[in-house]
Image (cartoon, rainbow, N blue to C red; front, side, top):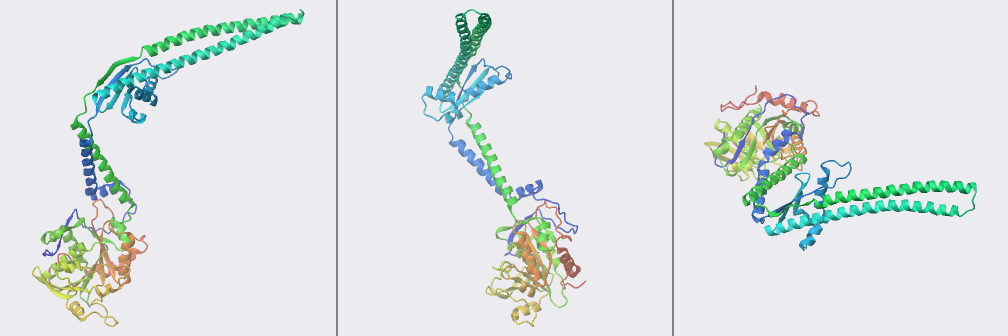
Amino acid sequence: MYDGDHLFELLGTDEYAYGDDRAADRGTGVTNLAFIKATLRRRRRFWVIFAVLGMLLGIGLAMKSHATYQASTSLLLTPQAAPGEASGAPILNEQSIAESRAVAGQALTQLGLREAVSSFQASYTVTAPTDRVLVITVSAPSATEAVRRANALATAFLGFRTNLVDAAQNLVVRTLQDQINQAQQQVNSIEAKISQVQGEPTSPAQQAELRSLRIQADQATGALTTIQQSNTQNQVSSQITNYGVVHDSKVLDPGGALPPHSRLKRLIEYTLFGLLGGLAVGMGIVIVGALVSDKLRQRDDVARALGAPVRLSVGAVQRGRGRGGPAAAESMSFKRVAAYLDTAVPSSPHAPANLAVVPVDDVQVPAACLVSLAVSCAQRGLRVVVADLCDGAPAARLLGASDPGVQRVSTQGTDLTVIVPDPADVVPVGPLQPSTGRIRAAEPVVAAGASADLLLTLAALDPSVGGEHLAGWAHSAVVMVTAGESTAARIHAVGEMIRLAGMSVISGVLMGADKTDESLGVLTPEDDGSAAEGDRWRSNGEASFVTADETSGQRPSDS
């Protein structure tokens, strides 16, 4: 394999070859746990950066924040329970009263603070450890201020609670007094009627009405007496109960300062919260981005879009920052891709063995793989011609020949011929173009093609230009796709341009494939006729593939 000084350093890990022809599993969804795990593993650098940023932000906030001072006070209460109320409800009612805006407002007034009530409410908490005890914990800029605020809250709460009890007592008294007044009015009304009837002439009717009114008067008087007695009893009972509610409730422990929070503890808490927050944000962005993306990653999806099976997939293949040589050549991903391209070259009885490598997205990695194959074949004694039709001539640059024209280069103890079309030549004509047409290839290009045992072409196709010219450089093509970089429309367009040029798509090669991808990457009869295309290339090319172990210097021959 090629390990020249001009080859980009490309690192590949977690790679694996694919060679199963079984039908693809069409029931696999993308929004499953395996998909999310693969996405997070693939973009781990992104969300790790967010986690680190969150952690640094937490550390900064911890260092910038001031120390918090707290004080607490506890109250012993006799909660006022309503008839039929659950056993734990009265103390919860007391807790809600202590947390109310009314109590907070009274405490602010006592303290003389010009602060929003809601802000002051946020500075303290009220808890009920038992059914008779409330604990108020207050935060403040200083320990003395925290104690002062805790005591003010306790005083405001007890005072507000006393007012509530008194208001309830007065309401009961007014209600009972209204009942007495109504009963007294009834008695007075009956007595007035009796006086009126007594003034009338005596008669049997007058005597009968008088007896009836006296009976009503006795009944009304008895009702009035009953209500008065009930009122007296209720007032006494209510006063006793309210006295216990008010006077048996008091401050159990006056406000006292609590030990300040440890600065180290605060630093650890802020750092942990920042780390978790950054981690959640980073992972959320990665997952949402993957779910809304229309880029293809699965072998089956790429195969259906391309209209040809994905015969090889390798793990991540990344370009190095500089120009490397031996390290790139020793990459297992390069060895696998170059070995597969070697086997994919079909022989031709009337022309040199030829193959086009068509990158759909990234051109640097396919260029390096093509150069690796070219050098390997040249070292076996084959006369190799490399045609670089891509903008910038990435393959030719790796061989040290970026100028337009036909050039002879030497590398790794072997010679190769490199063809770089003129940048102004939008549709460069290849040596395999029939000579009967009006457009013919340049003589140096024709001569180079005629003298070659193997013609390897790197070409990136543009839908705005088309790919008919590619037929002059090769009869079949291998399409290289980077997982997560191209849409289905883009991949399908490349496959159709190759087929419209009269060429066969041998297969696709997927780079950067996920280890969790369990799809086969083959076509089935349900793929809208794509399987027929796959059968066509199998019958035309598979029987004449060159094996990866072949090391002879002869041209491949028909089987």
